Image (cartoon, rainbow, N blue to C red; front, side):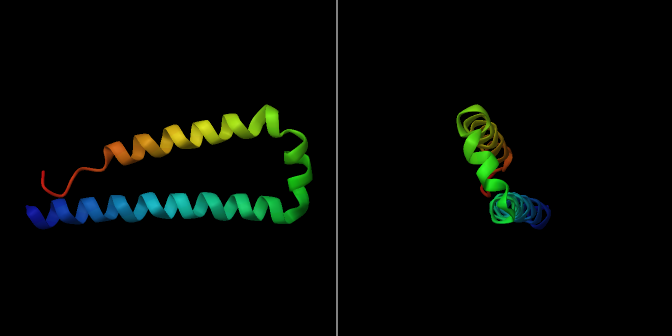
Length: 70
């Protein structure tokens, strides 16, 4: 049972960081394609909203990860 719990914990951790890294790779790719100028023009409209939504989702994902002791 502990091995399954441990596996579930580490698979969640790996999945979480894969999503985070994938998210930032998409952001970097988005900017490197030259769409960054359009985003800069709309910084005040959309970027902070997107950042806050990402932050809330990140906090939710972290809170779902069980502690290894439980």
